Image (cartoon, rainbow, N blue to C red; front, side):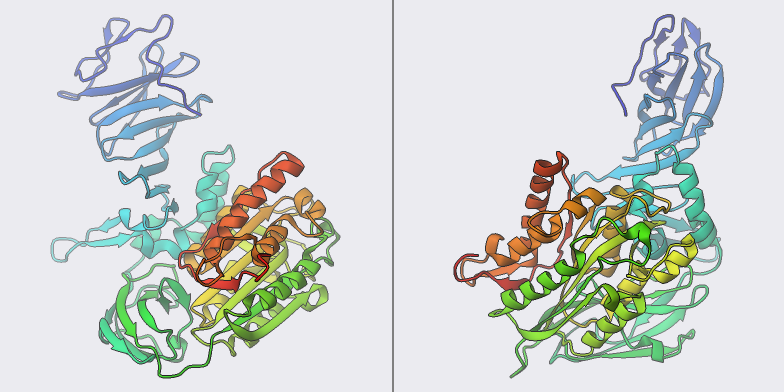
Length: 556
């Protein structure tokens, strides 16, 4: 928490600190380097310390004027402050960043860059972990020097997304346990400085046309120019949605040419990108293809497929509370999509897994893969998960019915985690895919981290990396248990939206995934405020809007 910077205190008079080379404390000079210009000052809340920002240094003093530490700055420190709890010095620099430094030694804790467009922003730690608004990952990166004989290299934050995009960590970085949380993540995932120093980055070259037209097929060819470290995989995105390719059948070797035939692409302008990702989670710069797919002369009508999973009866008694409606909600949601999809899509495969049918992550994934075999590119697919969800080290996990928590490592192995969910979503070729998560964290199911903010950040990470449309609510136990209208609050709002309460296109009567998200975003906070005097804010990100159901003729 920050108030206006304090520049005066009883018995402490600071003068000539703004745009001067000779600032003073109680009439005595504060020695600076020759030509070092002072720009800003702030006194701590207790009056026992003050910070001086200059063109070259961030300087921290005792009340008596003794210099405790100084840190080099990335640009003139135009503004400084000390947090009310006395833990951080905060400085606004000429490079456009705001940075938090430890009061104890001046070391940087986190940096924040708000872009001048007032839309994009990015925050990061010195270890490389970051959070960013959509489109902001290209704003920062790392310049690697290779000596006089080789050109330098720039690695953008986007190339490090696989490992270092950790919004849950950034959301808690300034908490009292922020250092411990960061240390645990670094021990598991690494430090960006060490990872980038541990060998070359992957590089690939596009051999197939970068802009062309197609009848629905395209042969994507790339040459591997340079491998990175560890195991490698090629990651394909179509319209920013992660799609599983056939790369795994071909060896990745330096100089080798890799071919992936893409078939049954949805009509319209398709934007493809491909990256080579190594075992460290470092990706090559993406190769991009603009592909205009011509409509086929005839094609089967699109179908709507649904996989709805709901668990109420958990084997672990620690999970017995908080999900009273999950199994029935899954059945209700599947039926609602079947009814509402008529007139927009032909009936597709609909599968409901409740309680014992959702015993393990293998059972859920097997059901998803079986449906995926039936899905075509122009179809639509809905994945609905209800029950318990949990965040561990920044990743989202859905808890199947038979999971029993014994330790954190086993939980990660047994629960359906973000990586497995991403793989399932990538295996589904539908260009229209919606993920719906109505999961809560049991207060008695003890795992590191906290529900709410951690869960929402982990869900956001899943959406951003997979690229799929996602609407979710990370509810607390009380909301899920008591619910609304015989359903969990989130699902109640979803069912109302599907029944026609969400806005529809006036010409067609179709309700889009964006309209669903907007309706849920309005209704869930209103319901929770009315029932519990607390607003639950859903997570909704639908980057590519598409119709999902038709508004009933009677308006409901």
